[in-house]
Length: 137
View (cartoon, rainbow, N blue to C red):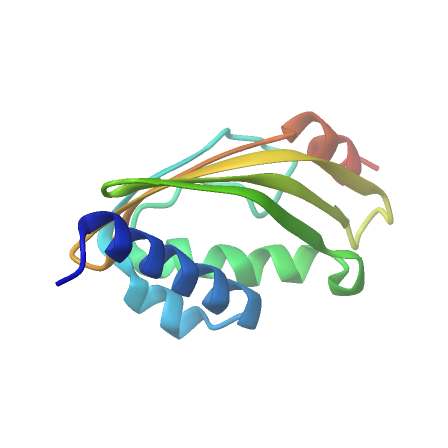
């Protein structure tokens, strides 16, 4: 019998695997039908927008890939904390915006909540100033 924390860790590890693989179909199945999605609105960043359905949340990775240079994309996780149904990942991300050729980088924290093996909350905190500057010609 697994604990809630073990189930959460396993689901988040699957989320990371699917995200790295660019598996939108798999991500859609992993997100709950309705997701508490939070990412600070940033009108100059085309891949940052409100989302709430599993399909919308899963598509964020595809949208990010469309607007950034895949060879320059970097993300590292240096902290992975789990407490029951909640997980927090902290690390660093970097990339280059395709339209401007400008780079962005900075720390991030991602809070995920898992219920019944599906992600119900996705709150991302990142260096939105750096990303907005990279998107601005």
